[in-house]
Length: 105
Image (cartoon, rainbow, N blue to C red; front, side, top):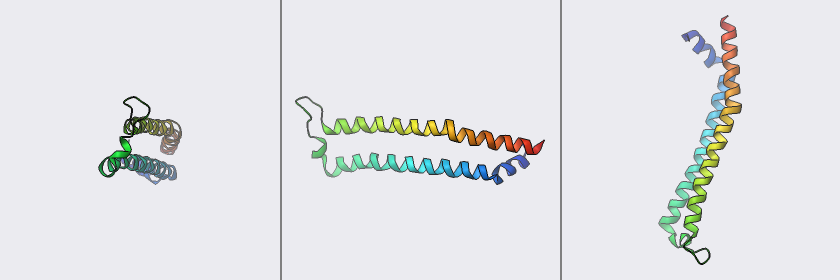
């Protein structure tokens, strides 16, 4: 691709929309992960007794359940990002490239 095409792509409103949507989603998911991740560590640091509560008569504690739930939730967030990337973001990218190639011809 030539520098002219890169310039056309950067000036295209769909490119700005794509960048804006991706950044918004990425920062939202990052914020959620950071709050949950550091929330667990803050609980460990300042109130570990909450995580030591036994559930039932076995060895399972609230800390174990919360830790496992966190990993599962992170996988779900990853799936949310992948789904949006494969549908909405890919569609915008294809439209953007199609328009950029059409202008060149």
